[in-house]
Length: 619
Image (tube, rainbow, N blue to C red; front, side):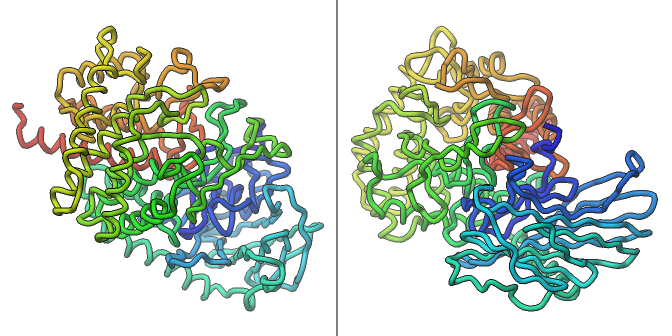
């Protein structure tokens, strides 16, 4: 159990096609390549013995309490710096990946690790133990000389190259090294994953071992890419560092060749330690992706919206799904709809949280809200892809007119049976409302009378059947009095005014029942069984939605207090997982796009409310 670092004890690095987690002790314990959803090379986060890892760190030996380790990001970049401070010296390990922003998937991905000493001298240790295909496949050691080695897996080769200061040694099928650096000295280790059929792979490193000069040039190019990208950010509010970090994280979780954002970089991390709620989040949910793109649009990043719009149009043009829906709730990053779920029984799971699942069976669920989220995202742009894009979108809305009034699995993907979820109806209302606005604004051909009739019917149904007189609140579905934090989005999407008495009553009910010291539960699973055993922590998405709802309702001081408290749960480099546990620990897959997009929306709404209050201090 002690072999597993806290989930939050990591920074994220990535190249816009794949990503790795680096713990604060210098261990890469999660990396899948060549894509986010590929089998892992390193997965010790899910099995400390069988998963594989790569550690590059100062060998602090018996220094114990005399040594301090700190981790930070180079400002406004995803370049991660792990600092080792001891009486003998101060050293750093710098981790980064070179952005691959092209529209073509890359077969080779480089994770660059640089060790250096800034004061005194420190010994360093390198241990590279890859375990291919989630630890199911063996590997062999190939070409080895003073600075290069190739480790051959079934579908991927791992090339390890090091500068002259790092003497590589074999350790069975693995590689290790020990070396000492003095003040002003640096060494580099470059890990290159090369994928493809065995005959298509080179089998040898791509050139001689790198020099420090070449690694420095790659570092500068990575830094400059991110600083250039951030020039489009128009956020100037009170929480600049946290909003920028969230924007970078959302960008890192977007697959550049298709523009498809994923929900999280990991799979299998538990919502409850020892529990079964361990899902694979390395895919593109229409819901999460739409809201992620909307957050980036709100910050000024329009290129991401254009890329996602193309991806969405391609999914619609691909035809119906196996369930008969125009859209599936999630896809692989290349748009492939098949996400067969399997249990990796050989992995013990993070702190023995089993089963570990790869793939996601929820892909076959019907969740009607996705049509509203997609419309909500694309309606932010001036155009949705020309007349062809409009025809596809209008066809979707025509279909929805005939199919919106059905039970579904809901936003939380419960496995306890279909219900008439209020949130699903809310977002179908959004789909109709935004489609009407787009058609009217851009004078596009549309069956507006039918669309308006459907929109108004949904509105009446929600206000009549989704409202509980007993609770004086909107509820989770039509046959319950259970509250649901997803409905915190009601004011943002314009369904109700944020000062409407029925909305304020709903907000008060949620505050009383779902909120614990600014942290918000999704719903009460005991009152609304979801088909799964165990419990979960508070949902960080909902905590930030609560802040946004408070701000929009004119409760700025309460919102700011809740927001500032929520920020204390961020990890040491500003990242959030999916949930917060009872002791303040982060739980679930990490980092979570849902959480970071909600942080952005909360900051924007809170800035707006605080600015309004400052302009009118007596109101």
